[in-house]
Image (cartoon, rainbow, N blue to C red; front, side):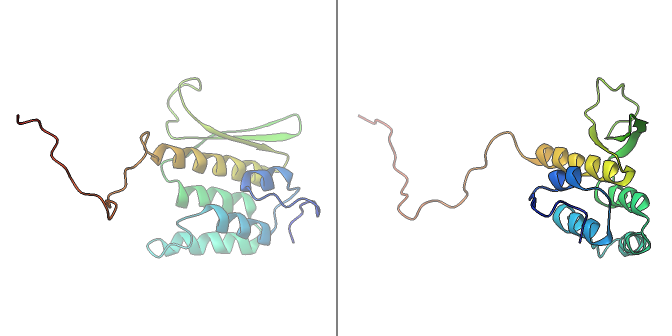
Length: 155
């Protein structure tokens, strides 16, 4: 059982990460099953096996960084800082850009692994919103009663 409050069971992974006190193997496995599309990956079985070994051994920070490498290879760790009892983590697609020009995913938590996982979930959310088109898709299948009509005036 994860170290979450018994009365709260938030559905969103970001909420679960914010409310968690520490990482457990079950908690991390739940986050992976909710957020990861490529895990377990048949094409990258070495990376998934490494993540499983890291989870089994309790190497939470290394497992979180390996998840970023597997799921979001275009994102890189930009910053990890400890300030006033909290870890602050930022992931970026363009590390060489100044902070004010880059859209980074940030997470913070008292636990380092949870801060990295929070930034990971935020980066996945940003990546998913970038993949959506700005214009809604049109259905390709016409209605069964649809019949084209010529409306030109030839008279």
